[in-house]
Image (cartoon, rainbow, N blue to C red; front, side, top):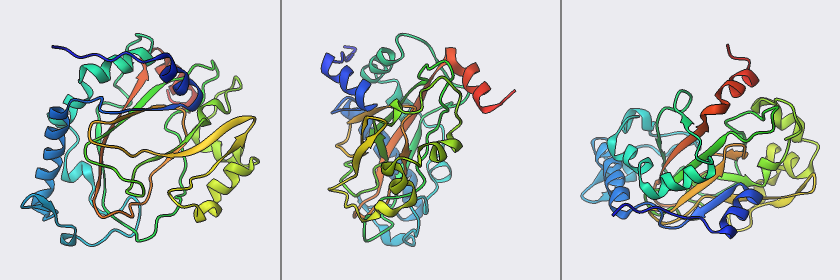
Length: 273
């Protein structure tokens, strides 16, 4: 039987306000298991997965958040097990709801990708490198959603992507703004000045920053969860790759659903022909 998913009014309000929503156990266990086993199987030749367990001593410990195994090379960019996650009926019904039934575009974001982060630090700190993947649009329209799917348990401090909940509500003032300009435009706000400079690095993963900017409530949120959990985020959210101070790799999959009717405006904002 095809399973779909209906959002509650409370979930819709939470997404509108925060730009991020966690949906526990949304993806079927079978699909998640097949995707996770693919990742493990592809990493076995590197010695990282052997006899049913991670063997992290097989490779040097990365010294940077994005260091270590390159998933595009080790796992590949086009795998049916990963594509099947995005085709899950429950996930597609959620995406369809947020896009209002509009078609999405595949020219800019052609397929889902695996997010794999080896343990890379002993002490967790807030990262720098906060960014968005889409511009603000002069029309004021929001361009779509991104999904993050837990393929294995992602524990606090274990490399889960960080997002600034509420940041999608900022800089929507009727002009096109490319992502490289966001830090300059937000830097007058104390919350973002500390975040962008790294001065907030004293924050522990159990005490992530909260604050206000332009009257909007903001909160740094770490995307953690159990296999099959899904986060849906507004494409306008500021986010950053996070350190992994855990004892196991972070394994997630992500995909972006850009509204097809806004591709032209997105390209225009970037100055693309």
